[in-house]
Image 1 (tube, one colour):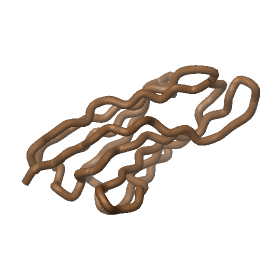
Image 2: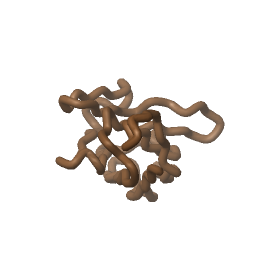
Image 3: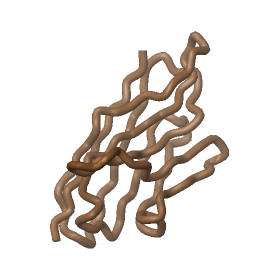
Length: 120
């Protein structure tokens, strides 16, 4: 069984910063990639950023140069440093992790979500 625990959301003024964390634990053999998605009220969930083996990163255009995705050396915790936040960044942020389990099964797992609210 795999658990993903997110933290770091909150309320911040426009131009401020927040750092999200996502910690993975459980029956994990290895992690192929980790990513962040977000869902604003009334909108579909959208991709924000991703980090894959080899530390290859991808970002959606709207957050490039403002957000930075990173991970710890053990590939068990992922971070999203969010700077220069805008009201349009307001959403529930979800971590997504692609995991190979100890029994060699694999799949995508989702965190419970953390609310980020940016006031103007």
